[in-house]
Image (cartoon, rainbow, N blue to C red; front, side, top):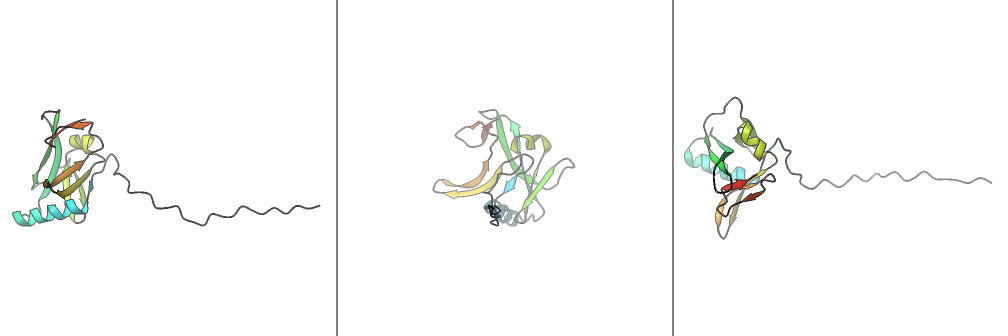
Length: 133
């Protein structure tokens, strides 16, 4: 008596694409909305080569304050992140606190502005400019 065994069917289906992953701890994501607003602000300032510098400084009511300013020059130790045709710069000490975050630009009934979606933050104050790590 012989018994025929069939091989298991091959799984030819590709796995589903992964959900949008957060940037690695060494990266910062710039959303399309943030890039668009950076471009608008550069055009308004007439400084096409400038970049936004983001970072953190000690201070504020919860320990640190986000830095958000124009950078006309990139320092040798800065890390540059580019997406959607726009770039931002971050110093290495700030990247420790900002790595893995997303820079977004939001519009709503309460106004509009850049938003730091930072998974490293343990808390923030109501002003939105002060953060705790």
